[in-house]
Length: 218
Image 1 (cartoon, rainbow, N blue to C red):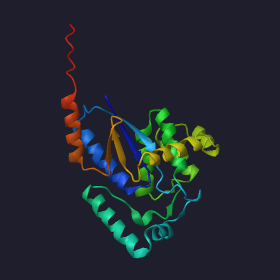
Image 2 (tube, one colour; image 1 turned 90 degrees about the vertical axis):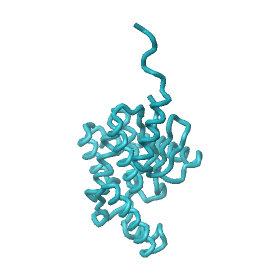
Image 3 (cartoon, rainbow, N blue to C red; image 1 turned 90 degrees about the horizontal axis):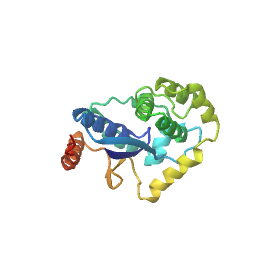
Image 4 (cartoon, rainbow, N blue to C red; image 1 turned 120 degrees about the horizontal axis):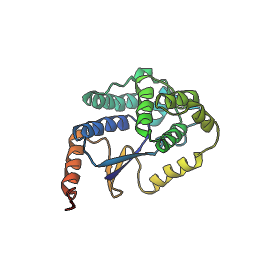
C-alpha cells in the first residue's frame, strides 16, 4: 500500500474539484494502492472565529468585486467541466475552518475521514451551510456515523485545537502555500487539482513498479 496524504481546506473550491477528479481515478482503478489521510490547511488562518460575510471576504481578499468575479468565474468553469455543481449564490458566509479540521481529525480516529470530508464539502458548496457553526458540524458528524453529542462536547472544549494549528503551520514551514497538495509515499508532492488522467497514470506507474503478490510460497 502507498500513503497518499492530502492537505486541504473544506471551503477550498479547488480542493473540491481535486477530490472529485482523484475519486474518479480511484473508482476506475478499484485495486489502487492508496491509503488516504486528510490533513489540515486553513486558507484563512486569521479568519475571525465567527467567520465573515462572504461578499466582504471575497472583495477584501481579491482587491475588489471585479477581481473576485473574474477568479470565481474561472473556478465555476473548471467545476462545470469536472461535472461538479457549486451553489455559489447559496454561500453567504466564509467560516473559520479550525473546528471543521478538528472534526476531520476526530473522524480519522474513527475511520470516517472520507465521509466527513465529503459531507463538509457538500454542506458548504451545495447546501450553503455554515461549517464554522458547531451545531452544523455536530449534525455533519452524525450524518457520517459519529456520535454527535460527543463531537459537540469536543467542539466546545479546546481539544486538539493547538495540534491542528501546529500541523497547519508545519505544512507552511515545509513550503506548502496552496491547496490541494497531495503527497505520494511521503516523498512526492503533487500540487493542485490534478485531472483524473494524471492520477490514472500515477496509479498505473505505482502498480507497475509493485512486486508480484506471488512470493513463491505454496
